Image (cartoon, rainbow, N blue to C red; front, side, top):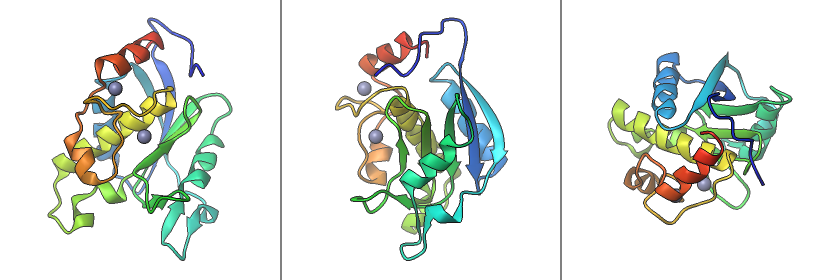
Length: 183
Ligand SMILES: [Zn+2]
Ligand SMILES: [Zn+2]
């Protein structure tokens, strides 16, 4: 299940789209992610997810449908979505994000990373840090990493408190696997 070939000296390319997120926030996320991964992140600008991906009775997007929508933007590149919506996957009340393991598409949902969702005052720094952690987590899956039980951004988060507790970096073992992919 190799996600890609080592590509020394060349950054791995990934397309990025977003929905209901300010461009300044998107840029801040890109900068922080690039500090951890040798990625060339190419923004294709904002895109609106299809209505067919929305479950109106739950008021949430269906994450699998979002992933297949994202895949549709490109035949060969990887694609990452940053969507300021809430989403779920069958069997889970919600997800912070989802990725195809070693695949083509990954997404992070911002709704439950925002302190205001928990009736706490808006905190831009905390919001950004949570988004960056979940982005590194989902991109890790996209490049073939599974959940990790060490102190690692690849540890599974059941709640936003788990997100706050985990570090914003890969452990040495996960880091080594990414290095082998040229990341
Ligand atoms: Zn995960
Ligand atoms: Zn790890």
